[in-house]
Amino acid sequence: MRKPDPRMFKAAAGALDLSEQDYGRIIMVGNNLSRDIKGANLLGIISVHLDWTPRYPKTPADESEMPAYTISEPLELLDLAESLNEKLTAGRK
Image 1: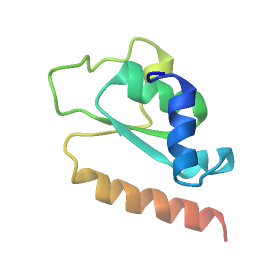
Image 2: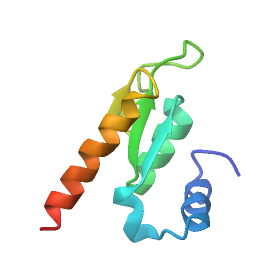
Image 3: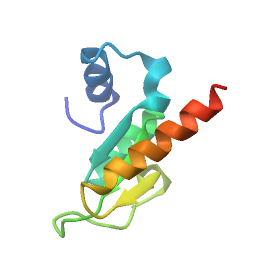
Image 4: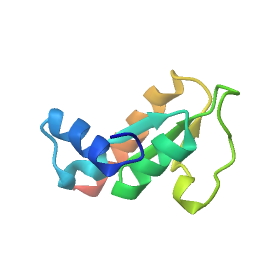
């Protein structure tokens, strides 16, 4: 079983005791559009492309590889996660 196989993402969520209802609150950070981003997108998980390595293509092959967000370095994830959390919290009020 390899990414973007949905079972990989479901297993990871299950290991954290999360269900499909939680997918919209999960952030998947990856540097590979065809595996990490596509896999997250298939399940409605928030996809974040970490665009910091020349190793993988940086242009999505199709819509399924389009990340919801792109960051250039890992520390940018802190601000993004905080912003996403504020949006989720505001949406529950």
